[in-house]
Amino acid sequence: MASVFRAQQQQNALLWRELVRRPGSVGAICASSRRLAACMASHIDPHPDAPSVVVELGGGTGAITAALRASGLPASRLVVVEHSASLAQHLRQRFEGVCVIHGDAADLPRMLRGGDWPADEAGRPLPIAQIVSGLPLLSIPLPARRRILAAGIQALPAQGRLIQFTYALRAPSPWQQAGLQLLSRERVVFNLPPARVDVLAHPVQSSR
Ligand SMILES: C[S@@+](CC[C@H](N)C(=O)[O-])C[C@H]1O[C@@H](n2cnc3c(N)ncnc32)[C@H](O)[C@@H]1O
Image (cartoon, rainbow, N blue to C red):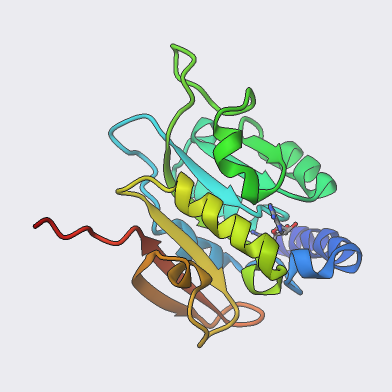
């Protein structure tokens, strides 16, 4: 128990260092709680029929990454995008075999074509099945937020799900405002501060 607490304190210390350097980009006073991380991970399918990857945007210190791995998702099927060089380095050390890309979530469609992305035996990049986001969208300036939203929507497959947490319990999801459809919404009170988990997808096209 004491070692779990110590590990959590170390993760928070890392996050606080980044928070001082880049407050708007971190947008959190603590790493996500285990409850919040488990709630996020409960919405992904760790063993899809076809080979694919789950992408986590804004991995931070790895609270959600750990929950995704604990859900049974293999390391080779997980891509984490993190903007901070030191946090990306930390994630690489903490999660062996996970593809950690140091970059901007707004470049996601380009990353898919890059050399770092996991590929199948024929060298083709594995498609994205689902996107999990811990990005602090509401504290990211509007022009950058718009680019991230456009990139996420472009990269999300037709049948895919995008899972986002927010501390703004009543605000509409920026993903919804950008065109995704809200499928479900859940509050997680055991988090500092309490959070909301939204599950979104492309709107279903009505066939005429
Ligand atoms: C609120 S923290 C969440 C960390 C972790 N997922 C958690 O739940 O504890 C947000 C993270 O998003 C990262 N981030 C912010 N803007 C980003 C961007 N444009 N692209 C990739 N990561 C970004 C920050 O560096 C930070 O690590």
